[in-house]
Image 1 (tube, rainbow, N blue to C red):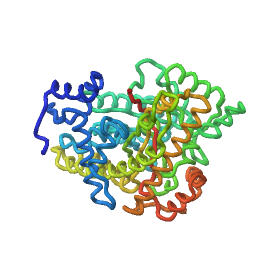
Image 2: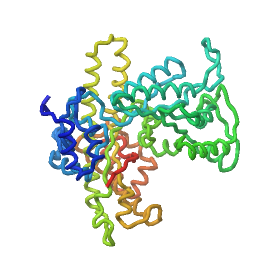
Image 3: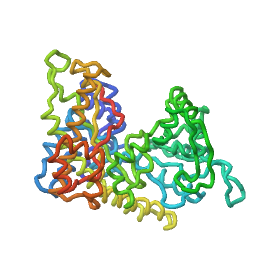
Image 4: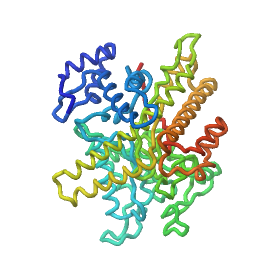
Length: 495
């Protein structure tokens, strides 16, 4: 390993304290969570400057594979002092880090094809969940395929226990893997059409239950119409079957009131307006090719198909406010647009770096001392993830410090003026990121399954066409490098 020089905690803390201008919390968090270290606790970086050069050099190495490469110096200047571009935890920790074999992905969704309503399938998902978490990934999966409570089963139990006991199983696995520095984060979702949806919604109301998972309900348009009109709503299993084996009629309004009450009291369940998600989703234009969205990551911002993953990066919006907190405050849209293009490019480079990491993970699994029967499940899991990552090249460019930006501009959060300004910022981000992806398609090639005809009537792309007809035309002609580009993760920037 090249990084031979090590630093004591005190040395790294003091250097980081100077870097953060005396902010002890920031310095301590950085040394504990993000400085490169090995399993013996040896620290190989003394401040975020070292970390940013580590990342910049790796991104530049990938850039050299392609046309018009950007330099390590250019990447470093974007990241230095977390001013403009901030990779999320997994990329920040893992890029160029030879001390640990971990994924660069922040988010995964898993789920078995076909009939997955069996103990074997439930246990396989449990195993895949913890295998991903131990590599630093947050995981989401859906429970809508599990038969409702009281359904007949062909084993000694005679009837199914329903969703809730399996929620506890997955929750406990997450809490277990999160110990001793590993990362465990889980999202469990279920369709509002499922007969056990109410039990799912109530599961976390009992203290001490399902404490290792976030939960969200997938809401349909027909359910919301029933809520608004105070009409009955039919739940069934299987949820999409034309001839279900079980169905029941409920009051949509009462169930919605319970969702709202529980969310008020415990901050859960989350609500996923599923029909809107599917309608707007570009990856779902390829649903029949394995990209059918089934759940989200633990924080709910990235709907994914089984075995797809995403790496995250945020652009610091506050950095683009000139003369902040004065009457002369303005937003530098030109610089923001330029950096959004570069952020998308860096994110695509990180996909390449993740593919290298997956190869290392798979090589490690092959060389592990366990027998092949034990190793095969984990190895096959990463084969599936590599396949989806390679086909779609999904990226997650997002933002942070939006509230700070609005305040620095002299605007009041929530007003029409602030909202209009924020919409313009996000529109600029979307157009710049997708333009960058189209340019990369010309330079590097489009993602392998791109098909213009499949996407041409997607509502999101049609809004993009309205805003920039040339971008839409170029996308239809050249494709995109990435199946999807953007996400808004729940990030906070401390000024």
